[in-house]
Amino acid sequence: MNELFNFHDTWIVVEQNWWLVLLSLALGIWVGWTTCVRKNNAAQG
Amino acid sequence: MMSHYLLELVLWMLLAFFIGCIFGYLLRLMFSEAGAETAEPAAAAPLKAAHSATPMAPKAAELAAVAGKMERPKGISAARGGKPDKLQRISGVGPKNEKVLHNLGFFHFDQIAAWTAEEIAWVDDHLKFNGRIKREEWTKQCRLLAEGKEEEFAKLFGTGGMKNKAGQTQSGARTRK
Image (cartoon, rainbow over all chains, first blue to last red; front, side):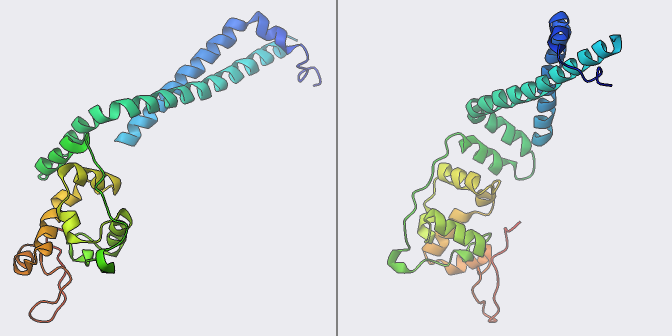
């Protein structure tokens, strides 16, 4: 259990899979962007 | 150990995703606000004209046409001689709007009668009336009231809160929506 929540060396995971994290970030930006557009359109209608 | 590694990776990806969501949302909000500020004068007229495809379209379209060059009418700080006109006589003006007009510096019929199309557009936009001032012909009403043409006013707009021949109070609600 302790090991499961041991994030002491967690930065290594990011360093090794930086492209996956970057991809998630990009996906998040895209989702955030489109969500905001939809909300604006709904407000106009 | 492998599951731990995967769990950490998924957590990092989720964190990145959420940060991205917030960032993307804020970015879009920022850009759309900046875009709306610069593009609104040009974009507002066709949009408003498109929305006013109703029997009242000509007036609303006319209003939209001058919406790009709105101008705040000059009010006065207090009523002349301390006696404001009874603006509630205008069909479409109640106690609330009368107070609003007073706050904007309008106390007399001749002030409102003198509004130009640009000034009407400004007041209409400021009070979110959606074309009511034009539709209810406030300037025409005020011109008649200012010139003392009570009969013509009564014929066109009712008695505007004055008593009629039968002694009944009649509101000038002909054009009220």
